[in-house]
Image (tube, rainbow, N blue to C red; front, top):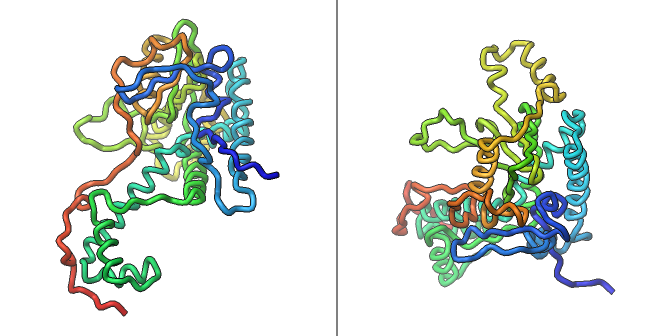
Length: 347
């Protein structure tokens, strides 16, 4: 008999969370929602949603979850070896871990929600700027049916409401986006010098989005320019409560070279091979660097060992369920008139 029982899919791997857990895999959970109190739970029950990766109608609906488990298993194995002292890593393991961290950066519910939010705003402007009289043409072209007047009005109201229409992307779309984006981002992790920081008396926390982008401290905060994988001064990942990975800015090694300088490839080979990597002892300043950026990148929850609550920053932001947004003309009001040209007759 085929089981139809609900199945939890983790967007932060259990094997990773165990690096922050106490005996019997208990981990402290601190909600960003200031109205909720911290609690302790099993790693099996956190950072997970029911059927998060299930592709309905597929021959093997949970096939991607099995693929993820294999990727995670390999990465956790590498991390355990790092905990025992293996570092720098062989290039093959370094590449595998880079992909794992890139995947972790884009696999959470916040990424799915962000895609839906941005797409809804784009549709809102497309419909609203096209004008009410052009809506029938838009519906036939994009939705593939001849609408009634009632359907037209309903779609107009839903599409042009603040934030745009309520969209739910298929799981398969999120999976495709996740994998392709992770493959693209991997190079930005692989080609950075890595610093493995080992802590003794102090500890690291983690969260539901544990890959943090660190802005260059010399950037003017008033500029309001976002930081990305290619422009970040550093990328931090708490690997376990006593081990952190800081991927530093590679441009300091190449900013004096011309684009065609053959030394660029030599430096890249040096970095990718791990010969530019180093290990250092954790300090109070380094602990704060990691933990403050981890807390800042969290979406809904911060996690830590039950004995490490004192390392959680005292001020936490409220839940942030999307990691990017657009405003300006995307929030404009529409009066039904087309922004450009005359209304087009439906074919």
